[in-house]
Image (tube, chains in turn blue, green, yellow, purple):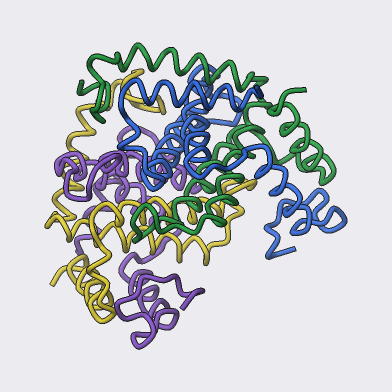
Length: 109
Length: 109
Length: 109
Length: 109
């Protein structure tokens, strides 16, 4: 079993032991990801990039990932496949020769 | 090599081919996660949970995950470990007998 | 008529001409605020604080404010009153002698 | 003095009494808006639109607005003007005859 499957199964078990699937529709899972992304970001507010508390970052990042894996599972997405497909697609939007050393959005390249 | 390592290596390769590590400090990666979480959420705006376009959800979720894996790598977090640790910790905040069938926040249980 | 009333009436007129009140429930308006906040934030990604494009910031900030005023109207909140009340409440969470020159969260003061 | 000016002056006074202007660069203010938008949204998570706690919504919405007014002040934006300009611009993106009764994004109209 892959590590992503193992994580996903642990998340599903946690959810089902609490009978929470009834709440986990895709829209609220996407809302959950946004909320947790905000909590993650709070660790960096008014700070230089290096000043965040690593332990708190760890916990909030885990929450973002947890809802992300649950949303992927909801749609039966293969996490590895959708990531590798996206990297390929982004390679077309950001060709190396144009994007190298340059943080512009592809629409401004 | 695990799935998560394989994805992370593909992301690092993509980043390094474009010489983008200079932009990828933890604060901007966390900002990136929030922005992508907002783009993901946009697919559900004004809609019932089932009406989102699955292909668009797939792409935006991949972006959330990509920045999340890059941020984990920045801190040398083991993604599987931080997820399983967080599930354990949440198990203490949300004991089954109290949380079952109930979507309240742990502070209101 | 106050500025805020004038803005709110223009927003309501815009909404009603398009028959959009049916979509504007409080949950989706709050989702809209988060999405627009993400679009605003995108102008600062990978950049130093001074490098954002002022015209784009202006437009995205206007969108955040537009949904915020519409959500206030939905609940019949008096925007001026809720702001002045919040400032007062924050004054208690952040007493001057403790908070001066210090960006810590009140829970860490 | 307009109500927006009055609110902005109260926010500036609060900030300056605590010597916080040093932290309030535009990028961190935009981050602050996103974080508060997430906290606002949390009141709606796993709920139907009507179930949010009105008092909590009020406080979080006030926080979103507070940072939004502070960011506007940072750039010397006239809040009323940028809102009325944006409504006009949106009127062109969403002509009444096409947009009426329809929640599609302008790119899909």
